[in-house]
Length: 273
Image (cartoon, rainbow, N blue to C red; front, side):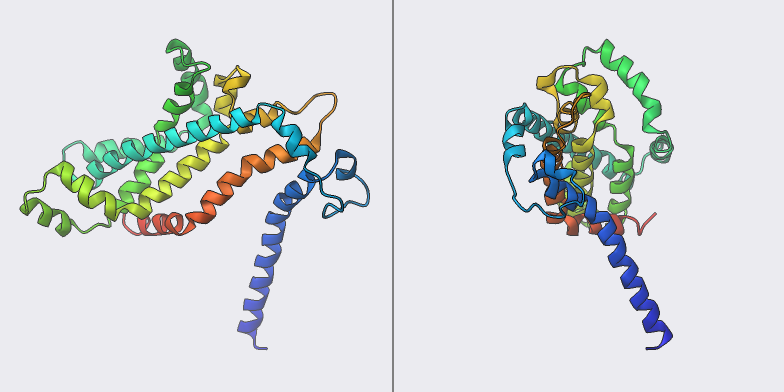
């Protein structure tokens, strides 16, 4: 074996080890969700449930998990649709329409990306109080619509669409809105899919903002609801693991199903500045 082949083998081995380290916690979460609590922490540990049980999932159904799941679906889907709609129009105008303040507005979007999200929590919370958005779905959805990174990403993707295509459409009598709807959106499908996946996952996994806004148990989403199952006196880890599986599984399924569009949207959009 020559030196180059040895390096390739070593790199593949490191990748396999890294994959195992990343996937093992997820496997352990799933495995523990099918164990009784007394088995989950026994020494030596059971790396797979010898006597799998659905008791943890049955106990999860006795909570408000179904309502939390529906809340998560509604909030994440609504946020994703709003972000895709608004972001696509903003990105199109910044990428393909020449107007005097275009570069200045785009620089503001880029600059806002450097502001940490934690720095915005207090002013956003005060605004939410003034607008009576506490314990409302709008309080969860509206702040998430401001997505400068998504505008930046989609604008970079739309810059790769040849200008000649748009000029030909204008010569054929197509309006600006027609070009946006009939030409730009279909050609930007990978980029739109990328920001849709990213937005959905971000909204689904959101915890800090929801913790500030939602005080009513019925309004909680899955991440926040599952966290309330942790009791200070006794923690049912089997129940927590079952809730974590239900919380994580939809995101994993969506990412695996649309991974091609996600990767394509990110890589192609990064080609053009």
